[in-house]
Image (tube, rainbow, N blue to C red; front, side, top):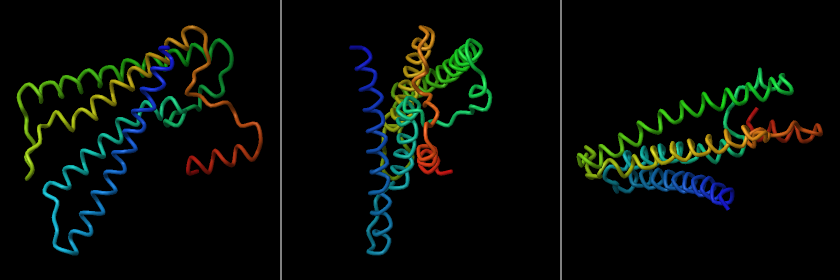
Length: 181
């Protein structure tokens, strides 16, 4: 049940990131057409920037779990057996502490913005904790994903973020095309 709940959490965060990406498109189109017809969206650039931050941070956990987050596998791809497991666990611990550090401070920043009633300085006054929720929430969900993977790897499981090597030349070409290589 917890596994399903976590997978739903990562998927929902990914969908939210997609919705914010769609919001960026809509806002940019409205701003572009608005210039031509004399229509302006107050603080439109601010809203686009906040949507970009939400897209980036909310998409991290889903991207990590899908094996699409950029990783440097130059060393880990060449190591086999127990040594590879130790290196993977070490990398997960480093990632866990790094993401945990940033998530902790992002939550504190968001909480302080709420507590002190920080308001944006644009034309439209927006409580700053609202756009910061995408940033801090995305980092907290990424931290949960790292904890999830660390526990899974600690129990002896193969990291779920690591895709198996391609079995055919067509699969290798397909992966290269999807990654933009």
